Image (cartoon, rainbow, N blue to C red):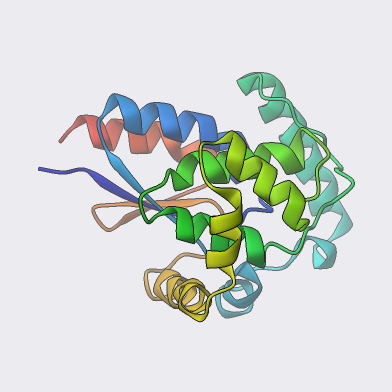
Length: 198
């Protein structure tokens, strides 16, 4: 029986970036399929009690930086705690990841976009940067950029956001396997074990 994980994320999320490589390794080991689903947390947070980073209490913002530093060191994944281009307008990048699902490798693209933002000081809202990232992951950047602007892709992004809300998603990243939610890259060990019991 096929193992399928629905992966809801924000391309701005440092946690999605930190977990991206492990997600790829885990799913490859279990021969699982990942359906990458960028969604609009600007719409999800108000519906689920979340707050954008700038509106969180100073103590929570400070602790977030502590945790990011810890996880970056633990996972040996490079991370700039305060990248120059964060938060980035991610609509175009999200559209390209959605479009890459049609015959491409959306997980590799999403992971490369995260790395560009969080480790390489690149602007993921810049179309030239996005084309370069897409090309480096084996995609046709020009074609993906064109696809990202199509109404069908924009509607897919909105539909995925509604789907996420209906399934109880409230934070990024969230992995869903057999209708069970795993919120946060620090839950990947639980997802790994669940995949191994199949």
